[in-house]
Structure formats: structure tokens, C-alpha cells
Image (tube, helix red, strand yellow):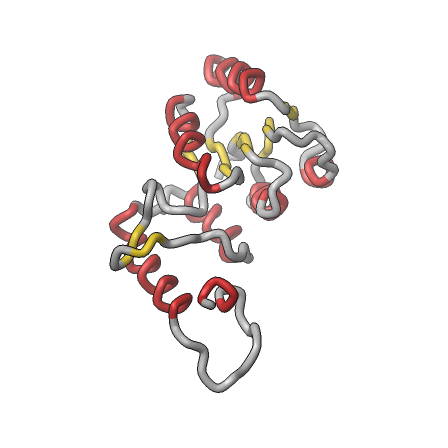
Length: 175
């Protein structure tokens, strides 16, 4: 597999280091990052050569220059921004000629039985495996994701039995 170029939006978010690790572990390159906060040392741990911007307009210009230079094309934009910005950032990635990687489904309001579902809990080695699958062209669409969305919704809404306390990360949101 050829190494792919990545951009990352939301570099100071709690999930961003895990995305950076997944990009690194899959043998790819993080070319540029964006975040309003510029006190981020974690980028240097994984990709010290990556460009960093605090202003979206400068980031947009950099991405556009990469789009026009076939040797430096950004193949994927990893979206680690707050949930309410995901739609806009996914649209930006696609308009820039890159594929978007976002751990939330590509819908504005994913709902199961009329209840909006939140997907911000946890990031594991499964995400690194997901990156590998996406890069191999084995991503999945919304139709395939609805089964998983339903299972996560069910797990989060079940009343815990037997054990008392906070034994799994979804328990807090189920209260």
C-alpha cells in the first residue's frame, strides 16, 4: 500500500492524538493540522514536520495548494473537531478532493426510534484497524452503519444489571 497524505481538523481535541497514532501506525503521513489552540505538543510527537494553522482560511489555502500539486495531494482529512462542526468539515474535505474520516455517521441527526445518537465515547485500537480498512478501500456507507448504530443505542440505553457503579464508558450517558 502506498503512503497517503492526511490533514487533520481539530488537533487539540481529546480524540486527535489517537487519530495521529492511527495515521502513523498505518504508515501514512500527516501533512497539515488545524486548531484554534496552538499549544499542542502532541503533533510533534507523531509528525514534527506537519504544518499547523490556527486560522481556517490559511488552512484552506494550504489544502488548495496541495490539491493542485499532484505530488502533495491530501488524500484524507481526519475530522476531530466538535460534533456540531462535523457536517461543515466533511463538506470541506469532499470539496477539496479528499476523503473524509469522521467517527460519526455522515448524517446531521442520526436517530434510532426518534432519539438522536451521540458517538463521542471512546477510541480504541479498533479505530486503527478501521483506518487500515478505509485505506484499503473497504469503508462502509450509512446503510451498513445503521445496524451498528442500533446496537450502540441499545447498549447505551439498557439498564445495567448485577453490578453497581460505572463499569463501562456508555453507562454515564445512560443515566
